[in-house]
Image: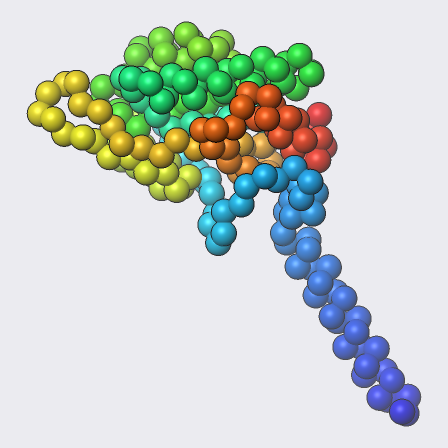
Length: 207
């Protein structure tokens, strides 16, 4: 093999290595978070910009709200069992994390803006934890954030004010500067959520 051929082979090798390095660089969290991940969402981008109304009545965006490790949950305050149970579990996880020196928060996004006004959402979140932020908004605003997080909800229209909502029940872990990194199912425990969140925070260098 002459020098020209050797140079060509070497150039291809360098280009391939550069391509691999670039690919790895463009996959934020892929390697750093591998030891922390317990769930995966194939081919889906979760999360994104939103504009909602917080429990003080202020209009806020994701940049205003997601300033610390956040357990984001979509539900409604008239929910008879699932939402209160999941919110209590997330609140317990926040307390477990506080004992470990991790400052996390809960974020409750109402999927029932027709009934969940600012006062109602504030009452609900304050009951579960002082570091749980309640968000509501117009039907259009709620639809935008729901689509961003790939959630499902549908009103069971019974013709009266006591209707129920069908909805998904995942809790989403969102980190500042990283975005969505993990989701939790209903069967996940407070301790399991706390352990996982702490792992992600450490891996992201945010501890």
